[in-house]
Image (cartoon, rainbow, N blue to C red; front, side, top):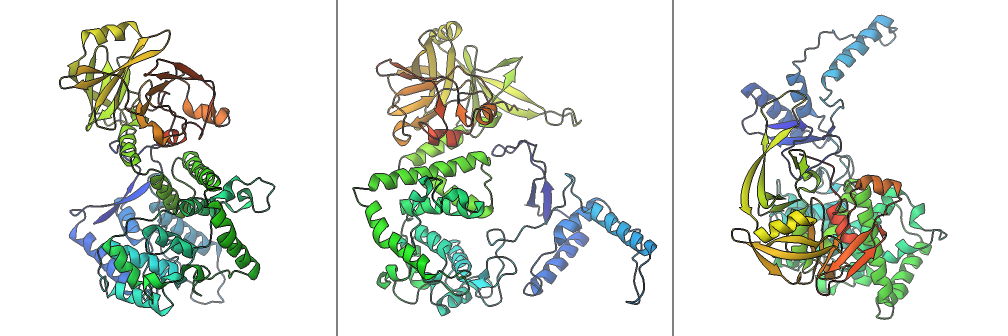
Length: 578
């Protein structure tokens, strides 16, 4: 049986919150939950909704209300007031009793966090209801649309349903709805964009969404700053998609889908002629002649120029500008973004920004920053010098050795101790005596995992010049000196460090170590210094031993993608603790 859960859990390593997950609500399935009477009540409500789903589409939050009323043992003690005659005047006593009855009921539906939980199924991205005609609408009360029907049909096929699969021949009915209205080429611009990424539509059949739009001056009448925020943040990642012209792998399923959603063979479609096609169900605001002329100008004149070798630099700069804005939106909203449509677009943009060798790089960064917000671990009033997540274990460097940290929840359930926990510390191995000496006399060392899966230790050997040596820890933590980082760059932090492929991040020198002695709160720096980090960053090159200094690093310049992945700048001690 499904049960609603409020808040979060400290045992969920991939989630973090600034308010202890206050107001968060999720649904969890428990096969053993509920009594036979409670299960019968839920099944009755489910069957009633299913049989009347075409007439009453909202779910009325029955499951949530059943659970809340049951947990609070609610019983309505105020009798219902009835007005027998329409001409009868409503007395103060009747109105007061009715109001008290309503307050009594709604107070029982209030969540432990203080809000009233409800279903948010307004947009197709949450719960796509199925209309009786075989198509899907944009929202739960909306009529079927070409874009929504095509996207849901493709989703069903990708998830394993056959051409005639689904409940009550859902796929067959949806395909008939699509073909009866001209085919998938009559989808709106959003649908064409997603189909082009998937590989069942050609980018040549889309009206231009040039990323150059994002570096115009504010004096331009159509500058993005003058647009409605939802419109701007929806087409920002779409312009990135268009500039990259990304297409997924063409698998046998994709080839089959190409033949299913069009009334003519895929390779015979004249894509330049279908740019303005739009089904009447999707065409809320028809394009005028002037707008069509503008799109044609972009399509036949601007796009060929911007994709030529003479102007390709402009396109590359524009694409980078678009992804910079996307990263800024992610940072500014703590990766929540302004809405569900924008969230999916920004997420896909982020993934597409990592190509080829960056896929492994992204995996390393993802695993390396899993515990980034929880790794300011203190024991005996002191901090470990470095903490890293390595092969499903949390390793920390301490005085002369490396230890494994395991979180243990305490048995005290009082409010004061509820969110506290202890650490089980296991010694993994001792360091070489030479390294102990280096550690004791100089600035220390840090642990970091390479993209090959090796555990590296970075030793600071000269405190005055900030020089470093790197060793690989293998076997029983025996050290093997390493002369270079094999084209990577290392960002050293007081409690956390990351290793990245330098060629994928403009401004990074290969085989270099970036570090800073600053220990200021990162979020305060962001807000008070107008998104600039006003402290010195130093670079040590392993090949020639040279030192470089950077007095100011602005967000999204030299280390744009690294800062986007790692959250707060990696060389600042995170403030959050276990």
